[in-house]
Length: 356
Image (tube, rainbow, N blue to C red; front, side):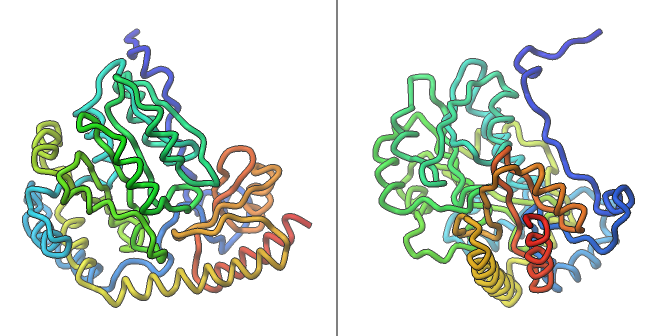
């Protein structure tokens, strides 16, 4: 029997949730709502939907392997060259490509815990060692992460805002960390939720791109743009970094429909504004209700809220039977996506029953 590499054996596979329809069938419930995956509750831009519909006739052709038109718009929007952009099958693929490009067996990557689980999986998949440091006040401890660098360190991962806690790292601490990092280390900044951030002291990662530092900024169309089902994201970095990553990027890694939908979504500023306003209103409502119930939570700069609990499995299962799907985050916390007004209200009503 063929055997995997030893370091592959230790990887814990990502366990996806079941489809809503299957959960409803199993539990005998109807009209459940999913607040588990940080999706945009208002859906995609109407312009993106039109772009999808108009793309069907061309799916017999391979997609634009370079993402020419999407890169052109991103280039103008971000004031970077098209050579400083790379498209991916979600930003997940890009962080995986970065690890496979710049790490090998025995190399180290520094990351926080809890944070996005794919960082650990990607590092383990190349035989690398993950140096995981605990959060400080629910945010990345950037000073500790800089101090954890060794001669074997190749990459530092920073989720900003952090998933699952929703906390950001601010300018001063980010600047201090960057001042300690040598040019032979790649800083990967995952900004999947940056469009939701309202704090003016949010760290400016683009400053370091313009300063010619070794930084890879990852962003996605899965969250505020509402295109999670199409799997498309992008990275921003110096040309020489992306030249190396493009050596192992799969040809045609982003499909025609995803590219055209992303292009339309970028241009629909009204949809982005509506998504931000919906999130802020939902956040305000949930804060008020959770405070009234004396439930501790972590204030967020994203579109989800992290709630420490005594027994996450119990809370998850009770809410599930009441038709509310959230995400357990280890044994002592859950994460709930900020939804539409009626979804947020149903969550609070169910939570009251679940903890009573």
